[in-house]
Image 1 (cartoon, rainbow, N blue to C red):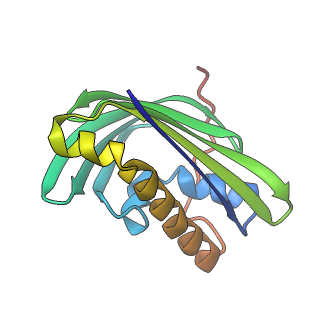
Image 2: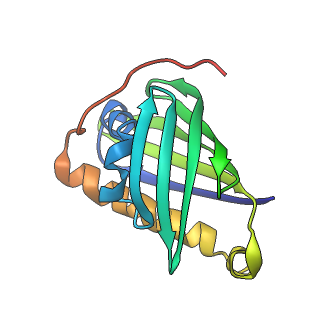
Length: 151
């Protein structure tokens, strides 16, 4: 299984960064490969992604969630096998550090080559920069889900 870890600091309070991250259906605004996300229950989402010419659909379940601290998920069905976590760290009243870790199973020749060349880390880094630009420009989150999901 492959693993990618990336970190970024954003100039918004931890609650703003966290609240925006819980708005999964808004992810296409800053995650380039995400075509759409539909949240079917508080803990289940259906993703449609497109990487190059390849489109994939999968479900992801929130397996742990604690406001202003972390969101963890695991794919539960579909064409993608992965798990991940994002953590939120208050650096100051106006600055937050986000760390994303994704463990995934590359399938097919292109995904295996891409993982070997670090394309997964590059994509996460790019998406985190997009998130930073989005949330810093907005200054506030599009919404919030402050529910707690125990592991």
